[in-house]
Amino acid sequence: MTAAFLFLAAFLACAVEAVEAATVVVAVGLTRSWSSSLRGVLLGVAALAAVVGALGPALTRVPLGPLRLVVGGLLLVFGLGWLRKAILRASGYKALHDEAAAFERQVARASGAPGERRGWMGGDSYAFTLAFKAVLLEGLEVAFIVLTFGANAHDVPLAALAAGAAIATVVGLAAIVRGPLSRVPENTIKFAVGVMLTSFGSFWGAEGAGARWPGSDASLAAIIPAVALLSLATVAYLRGVRQRSIDRSPTGAAA
Amino acid sequence: MATLKKLAGLPRSFALFWWDFVVGDDATLAIGVVAGLAAVALLHHAGQSAWWGLPVLWVIALGASLARAVRRGS
Image 1 (tube, rainbow over the protein chains, first blue to last red):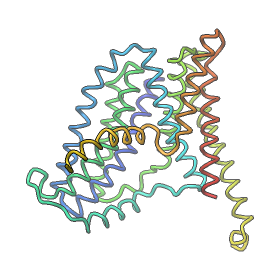
Image 2 (tube, rainbow over the protein chains, first blue to last red):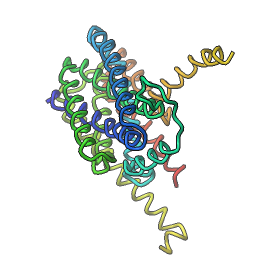
Image 3 (cartoon, one colour):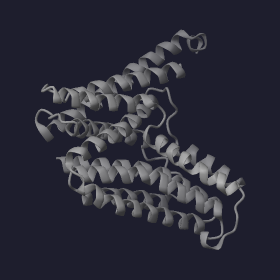
Image 4 (cartoon, each protein chain N blue to C red):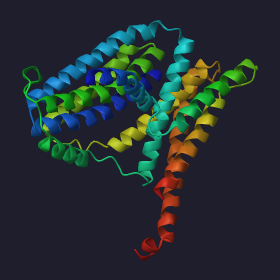
């Protein structure tokens, strides 16, 4: 069961970050230079591989107690951050993340930006740098999630497999669409990832600090639905608060 | 001179990057998590059941963070 959750969490987290990176790469590829954009992607992937290669084996040698304390705490901070944004988006307090709009913004910026011509960057330093930064920054969080999930569950290869499958899926879709991946339900996926990270972070963090969850690993089967239900209830409550606030305002009542 | 200034600013940029990467928009969540982990460790050392301490504190932190965001957005 933990293996299935591990695969799902790593796959979804990686897919959602890959969609964001792919949006930038396709936008600068279409408007500036595919050669520079793809060289930036390759260097970004190489830098990520170096981080994973250096940290992966080191993490597996850290004793499980301290590893779970630190990693559980960090996963929980990440998870709560994702959940907070997802709740605010689902309840209407924050605009939904729109890949089509992000793509248009990126295209507009890239079209007007100057770029130096450097051979090893494929001719366009702007396209190269933007693609490199997108892959490295979006990938860093995923690399962290994959490594820590894998190390905690003693199954880094499974987490890496899930990440690879997610990247292959998103790259395949981006190659077919050659545009923004706006049909991917990104906000829903982010909500699910937030629930998973928060649940695993709570479990590992508390165990790392010395506590024992009732039922040990089996408690995850209760923690995950509990976090999901609490989040959905919060969304429903905040939607109600927002609706009442709109109804009370003069412009809202008129509408 | 400009290069020296750039080099001097590197540690600050590095620290800011990691602060933004880990803590993000709202430090309340990170504070709640650290307080929750400390509460669990204290309860455990006192010989009490401790697993509930972390969820209780992150629920409070998330609630406070959401309430602040809602106040700003409404």
